[in-house]
Image (cartoon, rainbow, N blue to C red; front, top):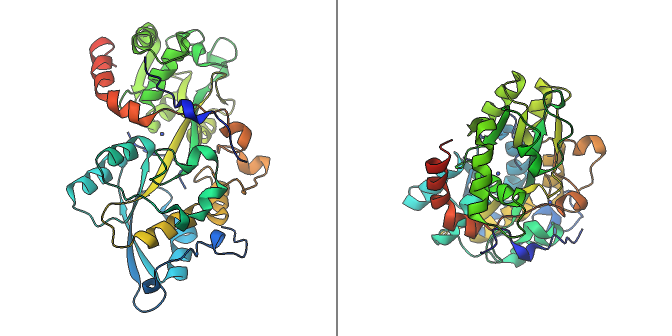
Length: 369
């Protein structure tokens, strides 16, 4: 059966998930080397250098707005004589606006799952990578997560397991431990959540297969169902249940772990031995944009060491720029380092999008979470 994992990843690097960020302190996204590459001064159109500012419409999530205004938008506006107009919403809402043609978006931030849908529907421009030289300075996994023609991932997080050690039997170290270490105190992402397809794959892994097997995955999920308190759609649900000890834990994105630890100081987050899952947010140019080169310059700025370093230190986004260096304290709670990124499992989002409707129907029919 076709692999759900992207075998081409090979997890080698040159130097690293509904909607992303439904709530509580979300991690979402250069120091110049004296050159245009890390200063986002890639050849922007002459129109942006003089006269009235060019309007660049950016579609993104609504978290960390003050950070993005100060650290990302304002410097780019000044450098390129641009006025950035921001459209805010979750992945599905913003993608639908682009589908309907009811928005003049130039640049769009989307999770890889939704970005793949946009690619399938021809909603993105092919990017000119010569206008985005900072791509060469990011981890291989982030350079072309959905193909060379399209935009990079500007941040890569990971889905692992968080748990309260006082409420489980021994240490949790593997995806298979979800079936053995929890006793009617587990939570799992809803099938329609960003992490839903990852849990389907994790169930296949727990079944012992080296390739994805849908039947084995759903058999394992049915086995686990009686231990699941709730299939959560929003991270706030997880945080509330965890703080009240209604659950001992379950799969969650690392970026939210600090919220769990605030409620339960002894909480632990682990990257399962079979591999945590890569959670990637992409940035792309929308089809028909009148400001394509300017949009590409903006993407280059988003990948710069300056922006990536500030984002990581502010706990807004995990960095993909390999030139970013963080202390142990600065790296706490973010997905950081070649060794960490190199162990991530990456789903094939084209395959996921092809099968997600039937998986959702099957989950609702057989498990009904």
